[in-house]
Image (cartoon, rainbow, N blue to C red; front, side, top):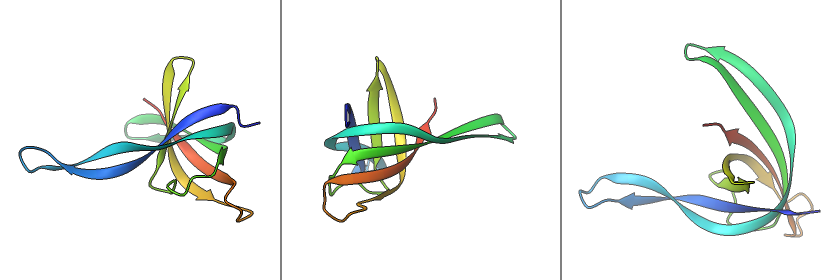
Length: 106
C-alpha cells in the first residue's frame, strides 16, 4: 500500500561567510507513502491564473515531520515538492501519518 518513497526535509537556519542569515533544507527521513489528490482550485490575481493542488498523503510515521516540513518526490525523473499544511497520527500508535500538503508548482 505504501509504495512510493518521499524524502522529508526540515528547514534550518544557516549563516554564510558574510554573516548573512539564510534558510536551508536538511533531509530528516525517507518515508514510504501513498498519495492521492484531495482537491484542485484555480484563482485569478494580478499575476494571472494560479492553480493550487492539495494532496492527501498517508505515510510511515516519523517524529520529525511537522507543519514546517516539506516532502520531495521523484516522479519518473521529475522532482516534485509538497509543503506540509497539516499532519497527524490519527490512532496515536506512531505507525502512520496522515498529511495534507500543497504541491509547489514551478
